Length: 149
Image 1: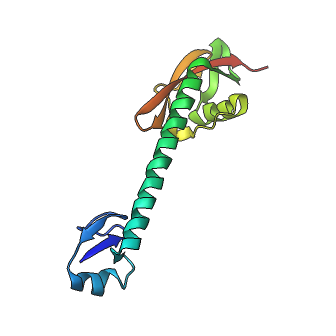
Image 2 (image 1 turned 60 degrees about the vertical axis):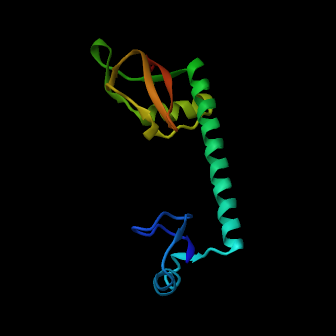
């Protein structure tokens, strides 16, 4: 019997897949637990529409990620911080600080978990920080750390 899975089922498939299972397994296990529905024409059509919508959403997310990566190339994010002797900062500039500064200065919303800082930023100067948008798209954030007054 062909069924469409409503949830991931171990050893059979992932949510949204159409799989072939025995009649008894479908009637006695999958249907009562609402893990699957019979693969009727309506159900198959609904499954295809959901798949199209999911693929369209992925394409939109990729386009937005590319747009943000291109925007970042021309921008310089300025962050002011307090420092002690020798220009050494009290603490360090974190990915949350960078995310907040991007949102405030350029209205670009990037999650702090997507900003990768290789070495801690603990002094004034210019820095380049990687940002991973997903879908194998990454960009570079140009930072300028200045003294706060």
